Image (cartoon, rainbow, N blue to C red):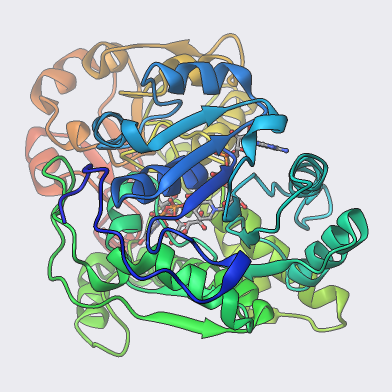
Length: 483
Ligand SMILES: NC(=O)C1=CN([C@@H]2O[C@H](COP(=O)(O)OP(=O)(O)OC[C@H]3O[C@@H](n4cnc5c(N)ncnc54)[C@H](O)[C@@H]3O)[C@@H](O)[C@H]2O)C=CC1
Ligand SMILES: O=C(O)[C@H]1O[C@H](OP(=O)(O)OP(=O)(O)OC[C@H]2O[C@@H](n3ccc(=O)[nH]c3=O)[C@H](O)[C@@H]2O)[C@H](O)[C@@H](O)[C@@H]1O
């Protein structure tokens, strides 16, 4: 099968009457929410041949999508939108959103409440639209949004109350990473089908069959899969699926906080956390990924999901100590780089600090819970004058940062006259920057590398005072330079 080809061989009609696709493996899907998860899922399903409709209450996003404009930056997304256009429809009218749908996937945001739980308001608004406007046929309702355990049964009760019919419900949590969203969706390491209903399982298997069997041609505009083998699809209860999503994010966040704590010890006793983690990573029981020390995790998911799982446990009277420590370490980590900077100058009052990178990680334009926002606010509150650069998110950041933060579209320009550079996002272009030229134009030559992303040997050779996170232990540090 080639991706983007609409016509597929019709396969056996499924025997599961009203809930199954009458057209065999081509399924009519409506996805509610055109964000990172909803749009990526929709494009991937359309690429493998399903008739996919995306419904969003944001008219501007839908209008843009109708003319092929992606609402956010994601590698390969615009090409994929183009390749899959024959199978894609975009809708903001709820009355038309669910026509002929066999499957409705909910992929709306579940942002944090002030108390740290998950705000399910968008999810229930979406369900209300579904139950009000899809009055004449039953669908499989699949939750892709990250939701607390127990939401599946509440969704079921809501649907039943609104329609008088028992719904078919499943939880299929999403594990994609921003910046690799399409590749992660087309070549996942696993799928989770949280439902005990055989009709729901049949539909989910039909929907994901090309992805499970990996029988499509990889699009040339995406990173190619390392190796292609059948993707395991774990079938479990809705509750297990819901909890597995939080557990996965909490575990990855814990790995990061562990690496950061080791880095903090390196700063005190000597040792390079990069080397220490290389040793750990080669142990297959540990694994090399998510051991990158730095200024901690950000983004729309790890901070929110760790807090939501801690809150869920607390609500049930269980104190999740390990997770609380993970969160605490992460909160502190953002400010450790500022303390390091301050130690070089004694005070940050009146110092010109250039912040390199604003997005929560490289490869995305997303600023949700980006460490840069907290870091800049703290720098400003300690009296620093801040100039910021980011290769993709400068305009969006301008609306979120204090007015007197200077935004600069060229990294080299941003460094002119600076007392210090603070690297916050590991964009490759910062490593490739002409640091000799930067050294000549900066007032003082201090670099705090919050992501351990720069070549510290080269920088030291050029004459920079370099400090990473757990990279050069205190014993190796020079005495404070500019007190
Ligand atoms: N962003 C990510 O990398 C991942 C996110 N998730 C989870 O997936 C869910 C969605 O996250 P994102 O895609 O990042 O959110 P997002 O904020 O990018 O997109 C949500 C979309 O839903 C739309 N929406 C809100 N209420 C609606 C309604 N009633 N009807 C129709 N559309 C509505 C919004 O206008 C927006 O376009 C969250 O629960 C998140 O935790 C899971 C895995 C990865
Ligand atoms: O639930 C979600 O939304 C998603 O959250 C993360 O994906 P994402 O937030 O896109 O980004 P990651 O690549 O996981 O990075 C998250 C944060 O951790 C930081 N990080 C990551 C890895 C590492 O070793 N060290 C580290 O500090 C990154 O800089 C970033 O700020 C998970 O990796 C996905 O599997 C999950 O689906």
